[in-house]
Image 1 (spheres, one colour):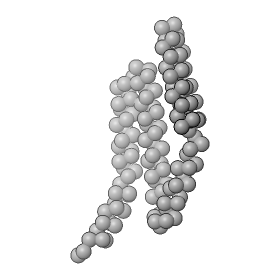
Image 2 (cartoon, helix red, strand yellow; image 1 turned 60 degrees about the vertical axis):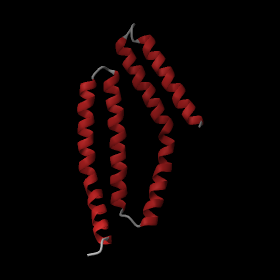
Image 3 (cartoon, helix red, strand yellow; image 1 turned 45 degrees about the vertical axis):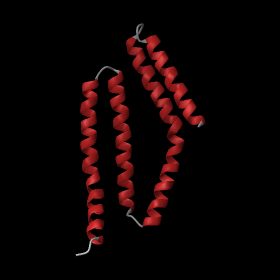
Image 4 (cartoon, one colour; image 1 turned 180 degrees about the vertical axis):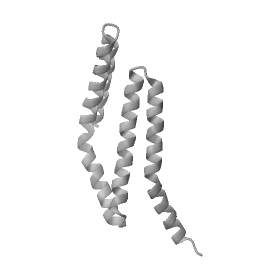
Length: 130
């Protein structure tokens, strides 16, 4: 809960700072927003190891291929990076560019998820009686 309060406070301070600085130096406000986002990102990096540990235990329990694990981590990472980039584009007034980045990210995620979908379908077909 402590980390959530830190994230909220840093986010609100960043928003207020950008609102104050934007009328004076709009180019500086962008850097403040990016810096605030990066600070929040660094705060949550410690939790990433916990996520990896949970995925490793799931793989060891289920016997799934480690390649699927790596692929899933890449897909999640791409999703977060795309969302971060789109947010920066929207903050800088380039919402249309953000939409293009979002579309590109969704297509990449869909292509990367095809092996997972294929494996799920093989499992379902194997379970069904013939």
